[in-house]
Image (cartoon, rainbow, N blue to C red; front, side, top):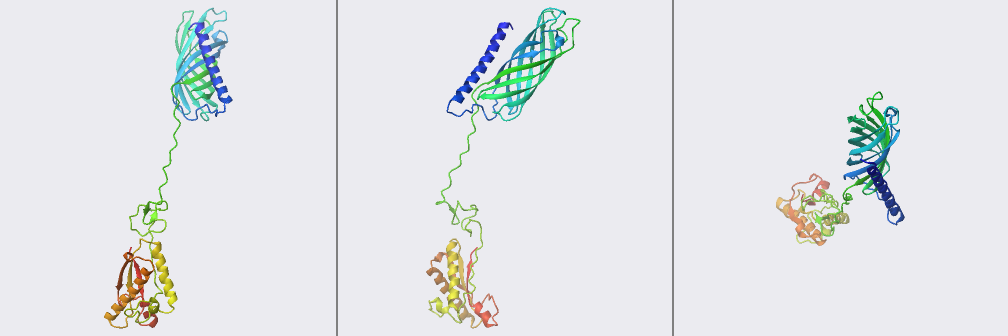
Length: 376
């Protein structure tokens, strides 16, 4: 490449840096937010024009410092790792009595960089590369040799499509042909410092779209087992399951212990339950009212109303008496708002299924009862 090409490439790189600086100034001078860098992983392909300088190995017998220029092409494969294919070029002039002339050096290779810190910060990195080094000498000793480099650098995203990179390192070239005898060597190590502008192609990746939460259910219209679905923790239970206020299964027990009847009451045609109940009547009525409240709180619950007697008397008479006891409780429930479709019966069981001994007065008093048997 002629010297004119070098000047053009340097001007291109410096002009790009000026454009980046101008964009940053524009952003900082406006009232809009100045977050010009991407904050997420950007895997677009990019090019990276580069200019820099060498501090040459003294055994090269050349000027100690030269410019180099080049071009890279690569992409980020992860948020912290990029690979570039690149080429660069420099020219050197022999400056000792060993000989006179010029020679050029073209390098082609791959460089990997590993970055630290967040994407939009100043990101230090380490680099390593392997290359093929082409030497074109005025002495006629032309050829290729392997080369490798290591280094460190720092990078900064300055727009949504551009970064800047500044890096320095050490490059070793196993060149054994460009120096004339007796200065011929088997390799040379040069220090380098470079500046690159990384320009990505295409549109920036779209920002992630936040998930839109579904609208809340209309609790006033969606129910299961009498509990609205906003409060129902067990919405998959079949309809008709006995549940508590949270919609989960609950065993309902309606205990009428304490509701006992006087001996041989109620009489046939007796409608007033107060006259049939054992003393103290108020205690029995309180138990019945509590049963009404339970049934009202669990509208899906159905109960069987069953009456019982003690063992005194004939079986047929006791059967009829147990039915009258069940019927008078049945009527009490319906009179207090419990619909008949939730009540099974009334059913009489006579002297069967006693809950206490019929050999004592207190036991017989407890057997003169009515039960509300929950239908599970």
